Amino acid sequence: MARPKGQPKLGGRQKGTPNKLTADVKTMVLKALDNKGGVAYLERQAEDNPNAFMTLVGKILPTQISGDPDSPIISKVVHEIIDPTDSST
Image (tube, rainbow, N blue to C red; front, top):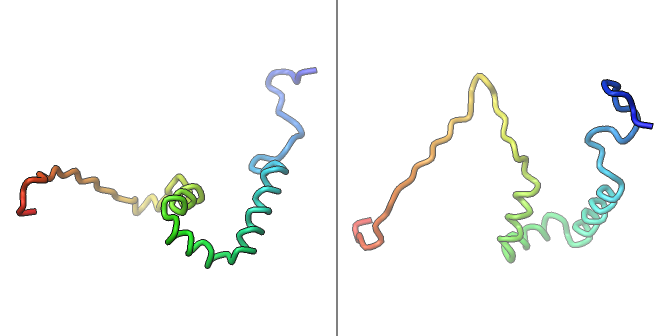
């Protein structure tokens, strides 16, 4: 029977808890990384396979940047058109 409207959801997994398969796969990957040399292995991959390594870095870095509201992050984007036939640049 469905719960009545307006009633809170009860039971189930807590928010943010990974499912068992995800946790098991993560454990296996970390164990394999440790067996291959950990940091030294990743450093070799950064040199030998920079595209794959940077993809990995992009996957693990946070996707949202937060800062101090009293000191906000300031960014500046500059677009410049360069004439490839101009030898002075």
